[in-house]
Length: 379
Image (cartoon, rainbow, N blue to C red; front, side, top):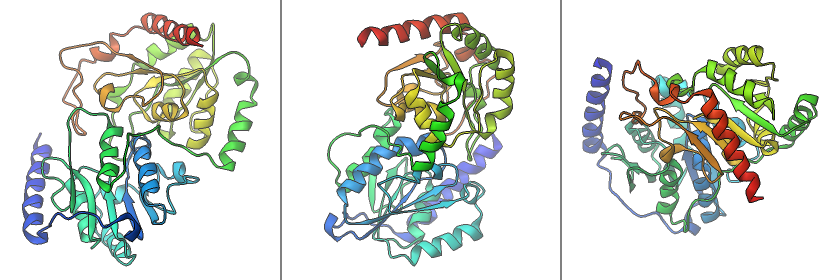
């Protein structure tokens, strides 16, 4: 609680100082034909990057002749290798911003300032990114204004509460002049990912019956750890042991899930490719899958981008805000008077995970089978 109080005090002081020193003035963007160079800032989580891709596509279409650079983190960078909406990608260690390493941030700011960007679009709500974009000297700065956090943007996008993250990010594209509504999330796999996926899909264990891709982990990204979003691992063991009677099952996840998934694999005997696939190759695996089963996590968003039906356990977080986008989905949760409790990066202290643990493996298996049967009936 004391730490949160200090952060709020720092934010209040920073906003007051920024408004006084920078004296930002709102101004419209120049016509699209006059914009030569654009910088997009989007770090942190893989899921957040994917939910921003419809906006990236719209900005690319709006400024077809502009040179667009993405500043992102090393975690999401593999998804950008073949992305057609960027001309250049700068990948930096996320800890530069998470730990506020001022020396490295200063050098990065000076490097950006020399580039002569006309416009910067900041896909972050926090005041730190607003200040950073202003200090680069880029004249036109587009960003969301959450309770004053966007104090230095020259184009302030009002935050509309209770909307899906994709819609919120797309508001930035609308503020630049993009028409229409957000499309699907986009991953473009390169040739190396295609070869990797082909090798993986040639495995006998993945070539038989309908394939379910299961991710028991997740909830860990460079900024925060949110294991509270996970359905219990022991429940996953029971669920997989039921589902494997009718389906092939493969476990997936990121580097932080290796130990957890190895234990689940040992208890169920299903193949485990955790940490053995790149994100674009995981996307291709999920395009082959009958469905994805897992927690609110990066693999869930990769599955949605692949168009795979998703079965997701939601507890502290709200599927209406960051659930699977534009794909058939089943949300598994237990409604309590306290969920969802996650707010702007924080979970309240909680020693009762009823919202997840009250969903039993037998109930989950029954609902998974009913959901998949309903999808078959539509075909």
